[in-house]
Length: 425
Image (cartoon, rainbow, N blue to C red; front, side, top):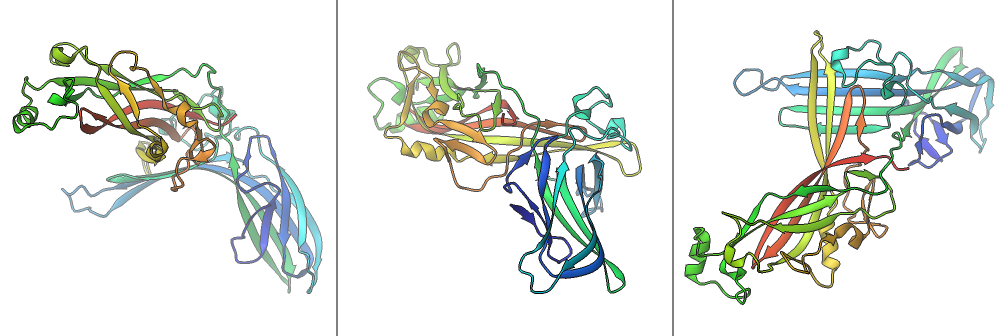
């Protein structure tokens, strides 16, 4: 049972007949009990429940810029959208007799239905210019409740918060000693995002790293393990044409759409391309396969949240865009390999490496999993699916940091690719 303590320091609580991590869908029914442990005798008591759903955004912006005397002053812009019209449901009304020395608590069972869509007048009181979506009744946002979401992001001169929250409330109103008394309880309800669909072919994005150069004499066959002389090091330092140079790009192909809890391993494929032509790889080594050792691949997801709110005294809209990174510590996986991963610039050994299949990588809300276990037990922020609604836009991109060694030099290249995350099936 999922229970939540009450807000006014008594023992009224809500017990939900579901695990605390349970996610509901629009149209589902919540069942459980309103429970009170302490003894209470009253000639008249009423127990009510109701469900609320809100979307709230908040932008906090510094007014001081260092060129004025308003340092420390802030402006706040807040918009609140009511997603569900609260409708009270009476689950008990009458005399209440719960005497002293009673071991069992008094409990009132209930069932509460989650609406299948937002309230009809969801845009009432809001300005069309202060939203991301048109006020078109045929738009999906008028017919689908957004999933639960909570982000707080700090920037250099601003801070923004985005919240989509659903809560079940209970109130016990009773008469005692000639006066009316009230006790409250509340519990959060997590609503799933609208389920998405994913192409079974799992088409891949192709992200290129910036052109990368390695220049030294170890690129020449037979000199791979040679200690460079002072002259050779000097040629490398000053970029002399007498020191051969090898230009290449790392390509990371990964799915543009990823679904939470999809059991199929993520196809994250690493390959490399030699860059030839004038000013690129030296002609003397163009056809020579260069050995690239992949030390590790660090995978991070960048989550971007953009919020919009109306002005306090004007119709002007204010927006703020912030991000946070989720680091999966995937580099730790490479420590378990018996031998390092190696790819060559040409020839038969220039075969792509499927990192996702190698480690059986699957994405879940609480992190990246390998063979059914989290890549790292380091706490990471919760991931949410992509979301676009009236006041909140939540998107993602994936970053790969590839640490590699070429001709005795270790370097890191970065590859970025757009990413859309959708709810589990």
